Amino acid sequence: MSIRCVAFDLDDTLWACRPVIEHAEQHFYAWLVAHYPRITTQYTAAALIENRVAYMRQRPELHYNLTQLRKNWLESLAHAHDYPAENLCETGFTVFWQARNAVTLFDGTREVLEHLAAHFITGVISNGNASVQHIGIGHLFDFVHSAEAAGVAKPHPEIFRQALAMADVAAHEAVYVGDDPLRDVQGAADAGWRTVWFNPEQRPWPGGQAPDAVINNLAELQTVIPLL
Ligand SMILES: [Mg+2]
Image (tube, rainbow, N blue to C red; front, side, top):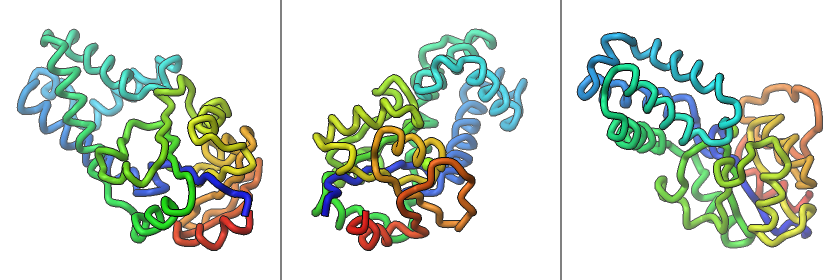
């Protein structure tokens, strides 16, 4: 077997992203209602999300650092509504971030990760700001890499090259598992990794660099990896 390292995307690969982000946004808005009412009298919850998305879109140079982007947005909100910036930035970010990490792993994911961790160098490469340590699965990974730490986001191959150095393996010894055809499959393939497309909803492949394998359930990795 040539594969020595297995690395994962997080959102929509180990857990469903949308419900946890929606809950985190609601939780954050309720906190704003209680502490920063001048903001919530001007913005509904939906309008505030639109405002944040528009703010982030105007700053593509920071797209790899979602934490900094969100804090900068909170600072701009504080200034616009005549509040001190520091508490809104730091506490406001933490309120969102803790809820954003209240994820529910897909069924069987923990068991698959435990099995793989016993046999492979395991890792995480994420564009987002979830924390596997905070979630309680950090001990199952030998390395954790992020767009924030890399200075570039997936699908840029540089983030995958840096992860190879962290794992101390060659590209052909590494497989990346993710749900996004471009950011995960194309990006990892461009850096020479083997690729597994996690496709639980059995969507058609959209085109472009094809993955080396397709799985509908992470448990299939144990069958697929020896074939790569
Ligand atoms: Mg994903």
